[in-house]
Amino acid sequence: MLKLPDYPWNQLAPYRELAAGHPGGGVDLSIGTPVDPTPTLIQDALREASNTPGYPTTHGTSEVRQAIVDWFARRRDVPGLGIDDVMPTVGSKEMVAWLPLLLGIGPGDVVVRPRIAYPTYDIGATLVGATSVATDDLDTLTGEQRARLKLVWVNSPGNPTGKVRTVDSLRQLVDQARVLGAVVASDECYAELGWGDYEQGVPSVLDPRVCAGDLDNLLALYSLSKQSNLAGYRAAFIAGAPNLMPALVNNRKHAGMIVPAPIQHAMAVALGDDEHVAEQKSRYRVRREALRPALEAFGFTIEDSLAGLYLWCTEGRSSWQSMQRLAELGIIGGPGAFYGTAGEQHVRIALTATDERINQAVQRLNSAG
Image 1 (cartoon, rainbow, N blue to C red):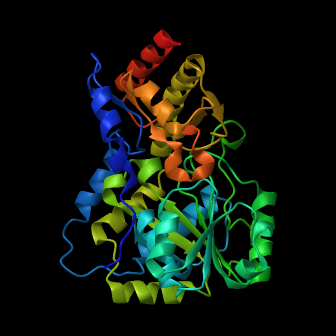
Image 2: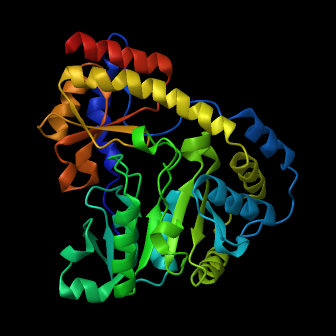
């Protein structure tokens, strides 16, 4: 039987227990799960499509695929995608975990993921027996690793760091990967949540400024969980790589990986409406602007955090020591140690809590600071 590592979030149990004992209860800022309502227009779309007795298509309806193409052109500065170049997926985590298998990667092959990264990139490599290498720069690979490289994961905006890769940075990585014959898969699910210089969005790996219009071997993943509060819908998609997409579609057909038809319709409606996305971003902005100075007053330094739903914080001590200090205030963070050795002195603080809970956290941090 395949033996995967224990699910890391189970290690938070003692900190949750300690935080729950606070007189005002625990404030859970550990996991980026949306708490605000799913927009009414999307709920209505789901109901409208609920009478679907037939099987849905793996590749997706023409409606949802056209909505994805239009969204990329309107929101991500990616023109020229065809509806055959996109496919809905059962959340983005499914594709992160299974893409190495779907691409035919196996033992002896190398998969690169960011130095500080969501654990599922490593899990995807483990599932197929490939070697996972943590680096943000392909020049650091050994000659043997370069020869065996098959897949390069990019995560921009990054989870947990909120770091954003510039157009120049992405272009350099794509050029390097092409020389080595590797696929580049860019996990971009926080792209609508840019702050400061990235208010208008962040560059996609499919942006012509990055790839010069050549989409071969380039894949972008996106999720509606964050921008539209659709985590419960498992609504996401993958786009690009016209040379690979037919095989990805075919392999997922064989595996029965299908997004339900009502969800596909709801996705199309969500992708066509920018107003609800702006409203949700405004909610997160308020929470971010309240939490950031409170965390700094408590003793944290905020690093990166240029986009996304998190503040990437450090006190210069171990993740677990910071977790303990926060739990004593009834606040649960996410230990940076979950994301690789480079994160062992950080905690990730999520903005995904109600305004009332965020305000509780702010008051406690300010009182203790």
